[in-house]
Image 1 (spheres, rainbow, N blue to C red):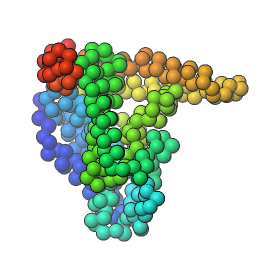
Image 2: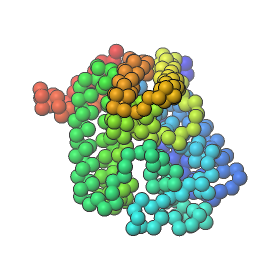
Image 3: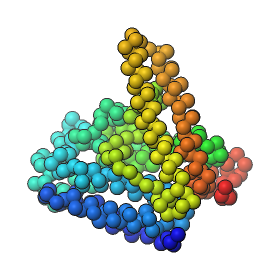
Image 4: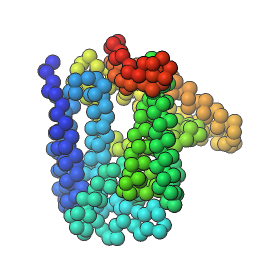
Length: 342
């Protein structure tokens, strides 16, 4: 096996620049060719570099490939400047773009492209999946109220994340909840800071996740309860960087792929059963919703280990937060000892 090069943070700058440029330039027939260097850089990073830890490689790949999906959409599949447009979420404020963005100045196109990349769910854009996202906060929400609520939310979910960190040996519950809490903490702090500094309004920050009540079917779990950051992602076959770098962890790619393919199979079966139930005269009720909740959570209890166990065995959860508020208050262990790999 060829030796791997150390990942250089400068790759991030080059990567973002390669994605940003095609969104700024005016439309022309060969704009999709800008995707070629993005593909080449992605192949190089995935196949020949490492951060030095499995955890670092995993999370680098997660962020890198998320942007890769957006780049393929915005550069190859969509004529963004002629198709996508910003809309106003505040009735008292006119739309940000008064005319076609392709006719705007370079500076306005730069801000337009930054806004597009900064809104993977399409919030504030014509392609926002309104029915799939939680309600927006009111535009009249006082800034102090919004910021304090989001910061309090971040603190609460940090404590929950801390609890998951302490009990990460409980693979199923802690792994999924840890990912959930980490995303909520990040977006809560980001939204609070953005509104506090005047970069955006409260109405531009609907919650990242829907409520638990939305998860009464597997389709609704993925389409409403879970985040919609990848909703516009095209069906590309993305490879786990660790799978490409080392043969000893190639099973993690297969397990993740199997997990998500199983979701499609379950949703198809679920849709068929719902169709047959409606044909038989059944109507949605409290009882059918209860069955739906039970079915959804039973399903994830069954299939989550398919994805989780290989990742945990590879060391994904061994490098968690090195500090703990709960352990500090409970037994005075504010700094956690690193766990030895399994």
